[in-house]
Length: 262
Image (cartoon, rainbow, N blue to C red):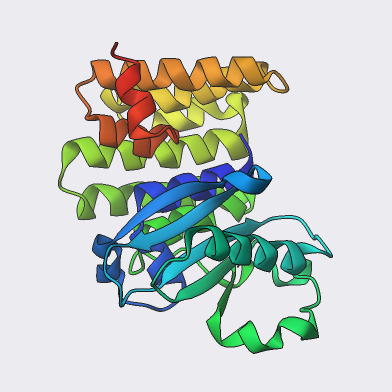
């Protein structure tokens, strides 16, 4: 599973994460919907877009960068302006870039200096896991945490999730997301450590963990990954989760999830 895909899943499941990262009130998340939007004319997709129905709320374009790309800013702003030309929204816009480390940020083109007031940059290596900050921010931090501290950090995060999220269905989705990050980081050989961290019932329900483990065997086979996601979604539906919850957990659209039932 690609690292940026994990982050977009975090934003989709816990949209308040974005606003916590850029220092805005987390309550704003209730006014936004996270989307992946296709720009049809040039056949490319902007993976992270927060859109509000309220005209006085800006659109947030979100990009996650874990590798250095000298042409990143040129591409990112180009995609934003193509989107604006095609959809012509009435809202203003802001751009948010989440860098794994400050050192991978490329030089900012001086031709775009007029856009700096609309740009937010977040450097994950300069943040720390803290039970007093948003759960989504802590999950994001877990992705880049060193393996020797990841287990203890995850235990703290799991305790925070159980304490702060009362809805059992949504709590399970967030726990599954934490487990998926751990499997991504630690690999299948750490399965016993995962069993120590979670209850037997939670491990039994942890469809995402089981399937992400299996996904490792299918690496490089797109059809295998797609089939894995499909089976994950079907299993979650069998657990009684709503189409919206399944979509948030798997990255599928609500329509795609609903079609699985036909």
